[in-house]
Image 1 (tube, rainbow over the protein chains, first blue to last red):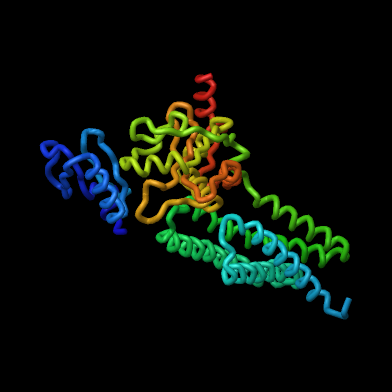
Image 2: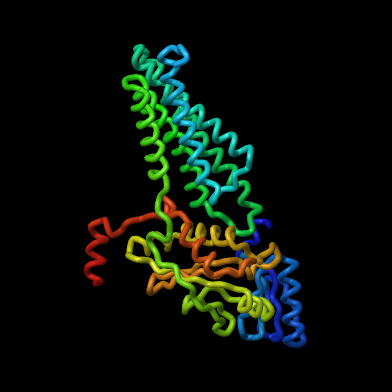
Length: 63
Length: 302
């Protein structure tokens, strides 16, 4: 757990491709179920917390 | 008594009383700090050295060998070392701790370890003094008084003294976890939200006055409460599930603090007891009511 990554967005999982771009790795999900599953896996893999921005986008953040 | 020279009896009496003081205070520690056998032995022995120093001071002064008394200053230096050793140990353990103690708590523990050696030294000094000038009965009386004094002096306040701790309801406002209207954190995963609703526990910590409010708003103090709670009832958090991290957040307007935890042992009584028993950290404890400007500000508000 490097302190470099604390507080940064590690991944973005979204249903709306036109809403996101840039920095963090972006994962496109086909439906809500897939988004939920991908977010869960990414959260576990990265030891990080999944947050819901409630606009169709989830972000994975390490605190 | 056994034909021992008087000064030996004086020193022995001091050492016995001082070491006993350290021993009783070590037992108090068990709740807050795991009593690893080696650490336990090390501290007992340091307490023994402290009391030896304290009791030797009496014959040294009487001899009179004032140079010998200056080693007390050296001893103080040694015991300051204890503080940094304790701090280093706890800080390095902290890295692999799922729920962190927090730097404030560590500092408090380290400082306590240092201070307790001074108490052992003081007990030894006064007991030796009594043994030197008065009889056996007085020596015993002074030793008991000093041990009791040390015991009560170092007990310190706990959160239960300055705050009310009551069970609190919790729910999700859309995706934000709320403990009695205090926003705790945003949880994205539906699965995590369901588990938190099912397995979680929450309490509300209501400060009794503005001093208490300032104290529990200290991040280190809140961390200490969370740590104590998770030691006593466990946490379901693992390295890959930060959702279940126990949290304490304050209500900005009322000053109350909400504490949420996903415990292993779902027992609200235990949780309340754990929070109430958390020591008030020296670094967190503040008394704005005692300061002039603070007092005026509070009066104006009322």
